Amino acid sequence: MKLSLISHGAAREVTGTCHEIKIGDKSILLDCGLFQGRRQEADEKNKTLTFDPKQIDALILSHAHIDHSGRLPLLYKKGYTGPIYCTYATQDLTEAMLQDSAYIQEKDEEFFRKHHMNSMIPSDGPLYTMKDATECIKLCVGKNYGEIFEVIPGVTCQFLEAGHILGSAMILLTIDMAGKTVRLGFTGDVGRSMLPIIRDPVPMPPVDYLICESTYGDRLHDSILTARDKLKEVIIKTAKRGGKVLIPAFSLERTQEIVYDLHTLWDAKEIPAIPIIIDSPLASRVTQIFQKHPECYDDEIYERFLRKAHSPFQFSLVTYTESVEESKALNGRPGPMLIMAGSGMCEAGRIRHHLKNELADPKNTFLAVGYMAENTLGRRIIDPAYTDVKIFDEIIKKKAETVYINAYSGHADKDDLDRLIQNIPKLKKLFLVHGEERAMFALAERTAVAMPVDTEMPERTKEYQIL
Image (cartoon, rainbow, N blue to C red):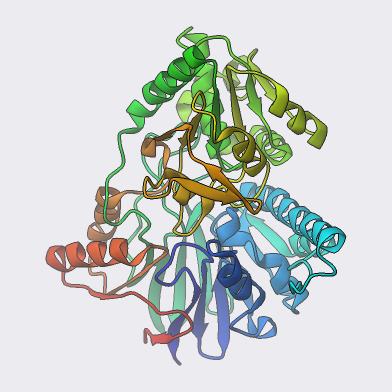
């Protein structure tokens, strides 16, 4: 019986995570995410599945971020009917994320048909619909952290705390290979210690083979302890100018982390009393799901807020918008204020509208609080090589101050990854995924010096034999 790996996404790139584990004549998928980056290239990758969904026996989902979960409705639409195993929190969050993704796609198609039907621009319609997104969630099977369950005959799985976002999990597969036991680990996106709200990641237990993310394989983060002070500095400085702080933040996890820190700063009276607008219906829904899953919280947030039945995500300065009209009304309001909206890489959502209206005003500040993949609008805004950017086919001059706080990253940095990998005794083979090539090569070089392990950086769709 043969054991092999095929990476269908996040192979020498950051987005589109999708890895197929072939065990004899059976196949298990680890995640099925959306590609992001250059629009035309990403669209082509997203609509083309490089495997037959009907030949997949089971899918295991590490977490709800759209670059890991975003093509599940397409998988369902193309004929997948097997189980989708995930933690209970991931199940709830994925439902919200996929319905939001489908809604955006349907609205984009509606806009195209209204404004471009007579042009020569091709359109294949939405990748999937709200109906597809809603139906595919019925395939989800929730599991607890630490619970051992059968995925297919001869293969069991266990979810381990990844510390990346609410419900995120590392995956441990135990495979019976004709009487020989093989243990294969998949980090998904592994997080950092001391992040607010959620528990810290646990060590990866002994495994024979490891599929490991490498997003920050070549660099360190600033200490999470400095993030709140830097956030305070940006708010005070921008408020003095009468400007707006624009924060592109993923509605899942990053928004809640920033609101938590703003709450802490306000309680300590360390920031001025400016309006804080969370301009994202998805963020509102995700925040409600956060409150439903206190089992994922760390001890600090439990003791400080939950014991007192007090929400960490709501205080007097904060307003959550719902309607498009509320969002549009922000354009005419003078600063100072803080507006946080999705998406985190500025590739979609309401943040693009705010950037179009506010990026050219030197009173304002664009504050990046997360990773910006290559070829995204967010990366071009924080890259000083670009003096202007295109938003909705309009060239906008970058006159607002640009600040990047990398301490908020939910990904392990180079030291975290080194510890995770090097603490696995007798690791036979390491597969590096989910990273730009420079990060992957740097991590591979350090690993080769530290331990005798064979390392591969899979190419997309190429099959790598494990056993």
